[in-house]
Amino acid sequence: MIISGRVQGVYFRASAAAEARRLGCTGFAKNLPTGEVEVYAEGSNESLESFLDYLRHGPEGAIVRDMKVTWSSATGEYRDFAVK
Image (cartoon, rainbow, N blue to C red):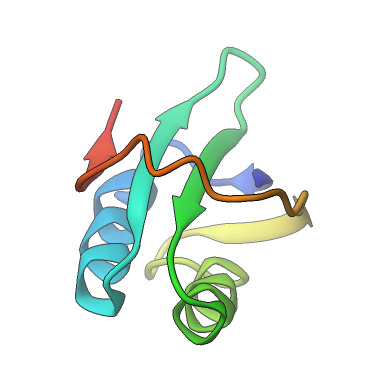
């Protein structure tokens, strides 16, 4: 996912990681030089849908203007959810 808006400097990555871990998702969240946040997540369909619902608004202080979602097969590469 590529998330744009006011998503850097508002605890977005850390709160995304906490929510992903709560839902049992693995992957990462990282800031991009464009001011966007990239999120890669793996998990069950149900947990990923819940995670997407959370990311659509993010933490208090964030303003999500757009979210581009690309679905693909899980790689099993990640064991936890990291903040990069």
